[in-house]
Image (cartoon, protein in one colour):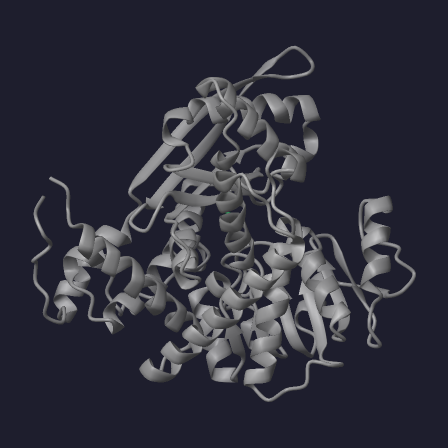
Length: 445
Ligand code: GLU
């Protein structure tokens, strides 16, 4: 083992260019702006520079540790065979096993999974849980696939990755278009391969298979907790504060419901195929029921239909993008009329949009803090599985609340002490922690 003793002085501009390959004078194209990996790298580089990170650590953490590509043959219901491409990227295991969800979507790409994996590293470090960061994705259209096809895809994907997964290696979880059933298949496939039931290999499982109470709502609960903290921090009154949520899936619906429970006025919900608006507030419990029975929010009698993009740019106290990446870009950020932006999704705001929002004085609760409630409760699930002893919902929620509130204030402290935007503050806090452990562990040679 050799300790990391490389240059420790402040890297000069030329040295930084040598690490990042980027010069400040080259503006990004829209395509580059919307590349999640570029977006992640831009924030990471800024945080690294402000921390005066030594070049060796900078170079290590700038790249994922491991990137796995698998091609997955699946027997389809009609008898044909399709081959799907899947990824698992493990960005860092410095602080513990890799951790992060698996998404199924037609537009999954390696750069997206890379970005999501590194965001998991920073997210776990922001909330100070003992995990690294990883993420998986499979290019497929889950809406067009049967349960049987999804099960075979999930099991074969898991089998292809079997040697890289494990409670001490890499622990997947749900993400876009994957759910408790998907996690049950992963748990079962892994267990069949190892000859014993291993519940802690994956989180977000059904309650009956080692899942945790509170996990399903956890990301939304975390979003609602940091929204409250943000409003208190700004001296604003949560009761009656107007909220617009983009996305009404697992994150968006529970965020909206929990805020509505606390007395916020949810005036709009935007979905990928249209939105709903009611200036007096939507009844979120009824809307959840409506979506469960009708499959979409459309036609809900308690609000008026509105164009989703128009809704995103409607005046409100709190805007919560809770769907996907690149929702706020250089093309629309100037028209945002929210006081506070709470990022339920991963990567909804591009770096160019960050600058515009900062100029407008929008207070941003960045994704790696705002949506960390999900992985925090995944950590609780992993702990409970390993103990074989399960907590009450109240215990889970109280522990989550404490971590989210403390983390919010840790990020605010970094923002004040370093005079940086909240997002860069969160990256600096995370990077400080991950760099510290990476340095301590040294380079195995
Ligand atoms: N997919 C969620 C996220 O992006 C949860 C990950 C986890 O629980 O491991 O944070």
